[in-house]
Image 1: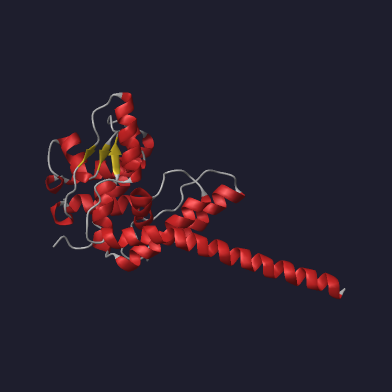
Image 2: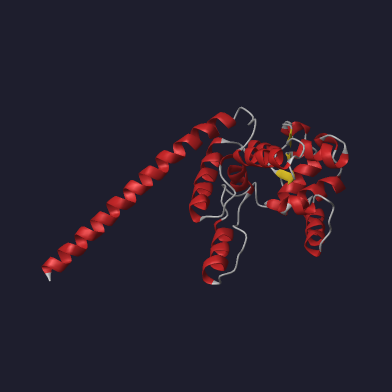
Length: 240
């Protein structure tokens, strides 16, 4: 009996050691991202991994070059800022980077009910994914996304998170950032986007390549209606 107990204890100790080593490796790997998070708290990104993948695809397919131009938060239409928060993460100001209830709900759908569901990502998580990570679906990538979102919330202001998100989000085939989107779809600047234009741009974020040709579906109509209704109900950082 004692021998069996000793074997169990040894096995548990070994598992704990393996877990600690795996955790240490994971954290060490994240250090590169943490340093870049510190850098991007002040400096604007010239591109992202996903942008580079898309640019390579566009070049291979013979399309025009990728559209991307940084614009400061103070020069983005307040309608656009509110529309994105209303559409993507209404509790953005209140949470600390992760919506655990949404994540658990998504896990319940994916693992228990065997139904594909959105990952419950906040705007902070989406910013991290767009800025650093691949767009492949995996639990490891999701773990990285959650960890780095918490780091971003510690090191960046909510205003900076929104500024980066709005500048690197995909708005269509090779169209990245709100300035490029404003120029492409409406021949205007991000600062001049109207309420209606802002709501439409925020609405197509769910699938920009699908909706960039102004395709209207029932789902998109519902999303436009909801964002229009919630636009003035959300709180966002001041533009000054």
